Length: 339
Image (cartoon, rainbow, N blue to C red; front, top):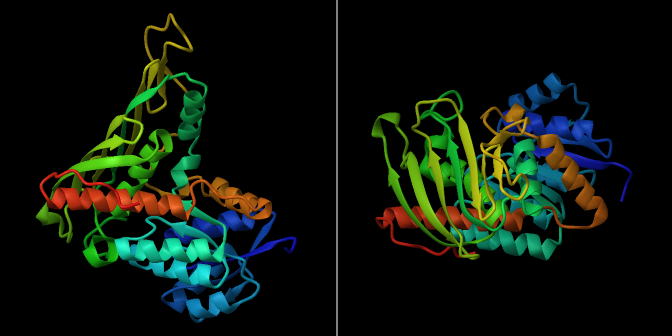
């Protein structure tokens, strides 16, 4: 393996800039090329970031380049699985934007391709590296909350400059659903703390005035394999600033975001104490810890170990989202994820 790993980016929307910046900052990677649906958007990214790299005419040309070791797939949702499958078949390591896929069949194909290729992958549930999430995770691992029995995770991102009816994100065949396009973050966060989902029962609501092809609010009750229970929601019709809630209850304490009450840590505690840190309450991709995500991917490639979360994790999260959508379509009938 060479001293530096060559990274290339497939699709040059807003999140691609964060991937590129992270590769540029990591001393073990260099951006060797980009491609996008239009050459002008690829050239714009190169110019704005001052990159000295190739602009590939096609994704196939990117994958054919032996200088490319890592591919960041930042395309719209419906292309995630096929583009990641192509990258795996080409022997490239993968940073895959969420969700892993929007149909069960493509999840099967993606799982087989990545396992067969033996490449390293990271699933871009970038909030896993948020300061609040890391702090609470450490407290849970120390037993500060005891045995977890309930979690609540919510992705609330109202219609605005990013989520709007004139973009691909409003189309069912391109985005999937509210759960897949945004709620997958909340599902992943629940899995991060609670483990695998056994069953999910969901109900959804649609605001037709917004012009979306799918229901714009989905709320799920879930049972985890551990026996714990939870609530997960994805709401795109909220009229409020962006919110990403992570609330946990355990036998020894409670975490409401970065507010902690712990009988184990402070037996005489009478009210929550607040841990000063960066919270996950911004929908701006520039706010998210992409640097830590890319650094983790590079470290795992060098060490020959699996990333957490990897594409296999992403597939399980998409499977929960699809089970929630099936449940909502059936009036709340409990469904089991297929992964």
